[in-house]
Image (cartoon, rainbow, N blue to C red):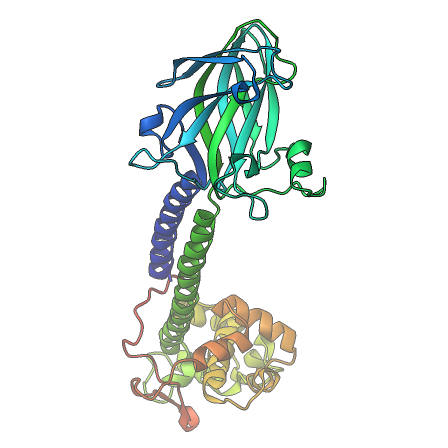
Length: 417
């Protein structure tokens, strides 16, 4: 059994290590963090473009100071237009520099550092395709879910929830949609915008700086891969463990029976002449009377005409047991043989046949001896066919001993007397 537990422990430690590495890799890939700066090296390349109210007759302006390693721009709102606004758009593009729709559905947040001078309230817009309203030739038909954020002259971290933006009422009214129809999809996004709001200062230029602009989200499929992997490898280990454990238990039990048989008198008494007649008489008496449930030391003293010390001394010197321990060893070894050979006999019948009147007491002693109940012992012993195993030992009365395993299992018996 020690050999089995050693192998099982080594494999368990190896499996734990592999599982930990797989979990680390999968969980790490689950967290998405895609930088948008610099624009040409980003996963989603883009071009910066100003967008103002000029087409409405307004005079608002946008000045882009830098759009390479950070976003640095200045906005100046004019009251000329009915709804003054100015913004900078990040237009997504393909490898050829042409406008492109990108899928941002895997990302839940847009994170960045921002500083404004003077303090301001800015808007963020994601321009998306709406299946019911959008037509490519009409840029106003693109849905524009948006939100607002505040900034001042100190750097602050902003995280915008991309899945909870608000669709403007004017856009819903334009296409005669219900105010409750606020759902949008991020599977086709043409651009994102940072711009002014109706609370931005008028006729006063204000500067906006953005750093560490990135998309963040979760890719759940890696956790599904991890769960599948762990289920397969741990299921395989569990199958191997219980299969090998069963074999090791069978092997351990059979080795124990084989080891114990030379210690019990009923296998050898009629074959050898003892050096001492007292020894032969004691062992012969026990080998024939052990099935008597009333057998005790006093009865044996009376039957053999020996004193109890002599009997105990002989058993101790010859076999290393006291009267009670040897009697139990004899009965339990015979019980193990009967459990292995007599498939139709019940545990209680076998207990009675070897001299136990109390089945519960028999079960307790048997479990202490073989580390399993008589029923479990029988089931384990029956799991491996005996047809290919070695020859049997015989006992007085022509009782056939169960064949011992001949190299069928590699195991180590660790239980000592």
